[in-house]
Amino acid sequence: MPCVPMLRLLCIAYATWPLHVANLQAINALGRSEIFLKLEIIKKAVSVVALIISIPFGIYTMVALRAVTDFICTFINAYPNKKLLHYSFLQQWRDVFPSLLLSAAMCGVVYSVQFLVNGTFLTLTLQIVTGVLFYAGFSWLFRIESFFYLCRTVKNMSGQDRR
Image 1 (cartoon, rainbow, N blue to C red):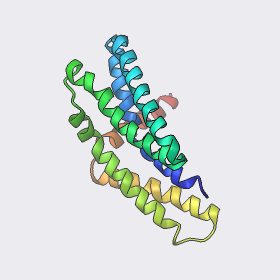
Image 2 (spheres, one colour):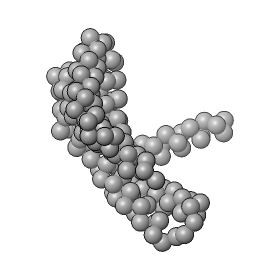
Image 3 (cartoon, rainbow, N blue to C red):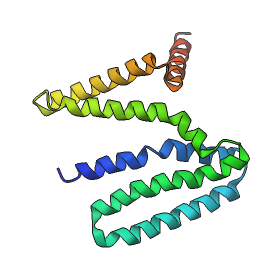
Image 4 (cartoon, one colour):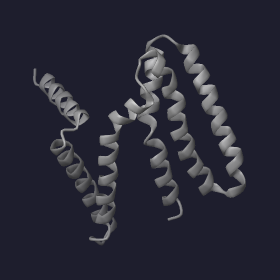
């Protein structure tokens, strides 16, 4: 299918969104909406320039440049938080990197399942199960903090339902 390469590129682009959202939410929580507005204007300008540059090269280039500009925009969003919260871009990526690496490894494992099984529904089902088991198992094995936080949250929510 011709859309698959574009979807893969968009997955890469959207992988940076947790950093975008966290940085912007922190700025809003501090009541600095003027910084938020400036950042949005700068990011839109970068995106429009990238779009104009990529139009003559076709849709694949446009989507690929979107992934590049989203990565660049993580720097733009993180810059004010270095001053406001003393939380640098490098520290943010250091916190996110274990989950990102685990997700990339899971992607490779899940992708390889398609070569072992015939049938679309069976392949998709096995990919989902394999992905969940792989990610949960290795998150537990490597003691990924966000995984344990999620487990505690789910446990607390299920405990509240019983009351």
